[in-house]
Length: 466
Picture 1 (cartoon, rainbow, N blue to C red):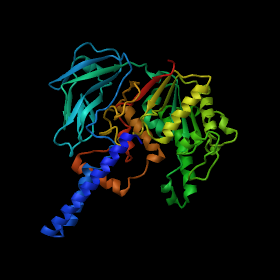
Picture 2: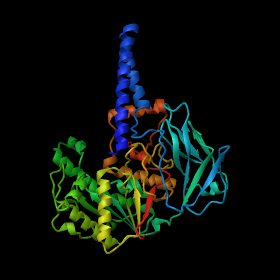
Picture 3: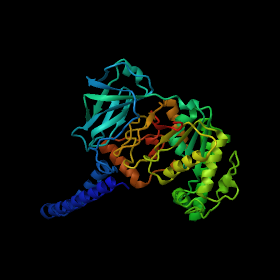
Picture 4: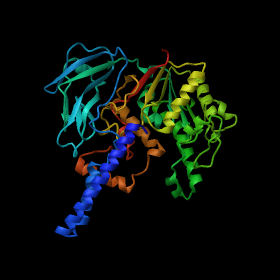
């Protein structure tokens, strides 16, 4: 955890303790002066208010500016906002990924309703209490923007009268050979279903079985180890079968079978085997029987970092991808995701085949567990970046309504995203729907159906040939 986040967490806990002390004093005073029957009523009302308006987890202040820098020479121009229209000061530079940098400030409804911006027929949401520099995604709106016809209106927030439009140009990477690295089954679909389903030559490599946290399977009468083995088999099957929904055949899908949350430990001790924390297994070959190619790790089946890097190197040389899609190591904090990209970079360094481009994605965030904020189907504004990231180019392809539906159905097939919400989460959603106006998609109850099924997919681009 960064020093900034530690400081903010200490401040948050201190403020929470002070609030609780003041609230308890107020409760005792209300009970003494107005009657003790009022105390449980006030407790219930306070809990409802917390669930409706104060339950979001932000490890930054909504008043912090987002810190983004783009590569030197990236075309940009000042724009003005007048009467709800974005006005360009010069012709639009060529490029498909359009990012508008401007100031957003929440109105007095800050704590009660989510602030959002309407961009033509799109919507992009921000944090309650937002007051600072933000980055809207205008990709797909070039025609209206170039004609000075793109409407831009803040709801429960106000927008600065000027901004900076950044224009980034990329090839359509779906037309190149791509390899999607998925630390777990479902990561490929969450991050890149739209991309790989448009590609004529895509392969998907899943690094782990995804066997841990299998408590739900114990209802079948299984002990912890049996439940974990069953979950690992099911999610391994998901990683091979579900891509077919996006047009990727089994011959282009590989399951490596390493174990969840063990990749960082493997990286620290490359020659040591790290078996599953829950299933009792220590041989990755248990889920490799359907792989289309033989791999170095098949020889002994040991879950070691040395085998993992050798497996990825072998796959690079077999599939010869021009583009590798992998988690963003600075933005996505999941330890397996960070380690996955580390393995990819080590494999590329050792490989005889060198891909030209890295496309990086973030399925999780350090600072905000609701990003992308707002309802499903909306656009994807840039995520919080309170500490500056490397100055990468962005690529944000647009997903049609039909492709979004196909992506939602792909997620619905994932065993880990199935099943109803627990009672507490259902209750919280009901409270937020009534009092805060939030909505969730009917395609699935898991939060990823809201976060991942969007107008855009978003990738950070690094050229490896430089």
